[in-house]
Image (cartoon, rainbow, N blue to C red; front, side, top):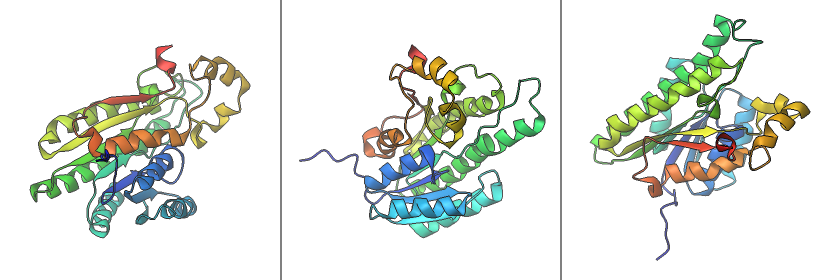
Length: 260
């Protein structure tokens, strides 16, 4: 008999910030593995493009325009997704922004709060409402669920001029660990994924900076930028029954940068 725990047929996965970059890379792989998909994004045009891409895999796709920095929108959209799709098996809090400053002492409160609003508050509300849905389903006799959050290598290392961003990403790890401990009784797993230097819109300026590539990317043992599609495998694994005993963990995908 074939080994089939990676088959996600019948499952529903929700990805915030899933209309581009790492989020879309995850969503695309989940759809290829058979999962129905819910995408949250704040840009309608990009949402439409992602919908076309994902529907090509023959799965159900629900697109919702959501600003995760608004609690009411998160609560309403999660309830709507649950009702329309019938269940939520995997929820990935991936939406994020990166607002830096010329220096730490020049970092304004507005920059600090802008990062917190999306990266931390948004992830908190997303994971809380997803957990609420999964617990209700478990109490009805259908245990299980996978919660994920996209953190960052920056949560483990110093990032000059980006203290606000890295503070939000660092906070995600203990949040996920706490969820893992509290809700394991319902079969709910919670893990964080930490990307290293990945070629996305957020890192566009650095990608075209020869000095940065020479100083930083040359130190990546893989000798290149990572790609958003390379996060598909870990998303499918954590969404699948193959990871049924894997929770409270930090998965680092950085091409070996942090160990070199």
